[in-house]
Amino acid sequence: MENELTRGPVISTMLRFAVPMILGDLLQQCYNIADTLIVGRYLGENALAAVGSAFSLMTFLTSVILGLAMGSGTVFSIRYGQKDMVRLKEGILAAFVLLGAVTALLNVLVFAGLDGIIWFLRTPEELKEIMKDYLIVIFAGLVGIFLYNFFASLLRSLGNSVVPLAFLAVSALLNIGLDLWFVAGINRGVAGAAEATVISQYVSGIGIAVYTYMKFPELFHRDGKICLRRERILEITNFSALTCMQQSIMNFGILAVQGLVNSFGTTIMAAFAAAVKIDAFAYLPVQDFGNAFSIFIAQNYGAGEKKRIHRGMRAAVLISVSFGLLISLCVFVFAVPLMSMFIDAGETAVISEGVRYLRIEGIFYFMIGILFLLYGLYRALGRPGMSVVLTLVSLGTRVALAYSLSAIPALGVVGIWWSVPVGWFLADALGIGYLAVKRKRIFDAIQTV
Image 1 (cartoon, rainbow, N blue to C red):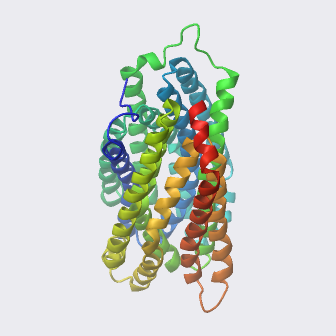
Image 2 (spheres, rainbow, N blue to C red):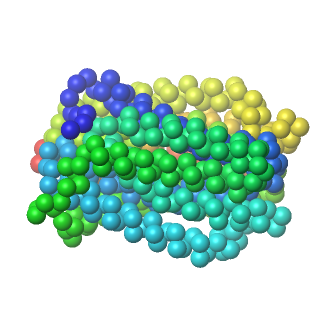
């Protein structure tokens, strides 16, 4: 049907599959990068701070949908590796219903709790109306996010990572063009930036849904054997719920830290808003490589290819660590010009704080690369609970240290910046240690799949 990841040279097969995923999510980051850059340049520090804070919230909400889609994709990959088309199609139906229901619930909750959300984020009084204008529009894009992530996960589970990239490329370019028009051209303010993002999200979501249905009608054809079965819903839920929990915990921790950052005032908020975009863009490739690695492992797990899994693990560590070290060097050296892309050169205090954040956290990107591989490995081998544990360790440490260290007068906001790599290190140590102890049991189970 599509590309099988159970055959061919391990490194080249993995990279051919991973590179379009990396490029696709880099383009997806362009949604938020465009908002931040254009808002910062045309609307000023207050608007940048508000949009940056709202970005952390949307990342959290998107993580719920993304986690469910990733968990579903793991099931699809295993069934595709086993060539079990009946259970694959039943899983697709069950996952679509589950994700659609969760998306509808999220829409109701966020619109009903808008004022409470703004309060929870400890938003300064002068930014509340700006943030509300932005959030009212941006929340309307959740359905588009659901459609894109569901169908992208389905295509990737079949070994096709190129088509999701194509739809994101069109959508990202559209977003940038609409951003310039709505914000700089017709003065729609922060609401215009949100409108540009939402329109672009629906273009990619609806477009990839139509493509998948037209290209693979056999996956959606319901004969007498294919129906919404309770056992398929439970299977999808078991995989997806823990992956969703992992993604949600990860981004809820970031949201909690965002609230702490907001308490330090508008300058720190603006610096954090810009630096986080650079940060996310920098380590996004290792995050996506971890997701591609997970699909590679899941297909080979379904096919019982034990030796190929071992070779894939060794290759993935080498690739991820090498890239992490390279990108750390680039971010450290170019921190000042990178920050200057998002904020006027006259805002020296904002740029200085953003540079300090990047130079503290950015030298440890290799550690988060290893963590993303561990997340993907445990998810693909049917142990998503371990991914949740690692996320709790990483984010729990980050939040606890951020609040405790920032309360020390000599550290202040710098304590927040240092809490991140410490969390990565502890989670890596636990994940590697667990694999060393349980390795034989985990890999012996592959033969019985």
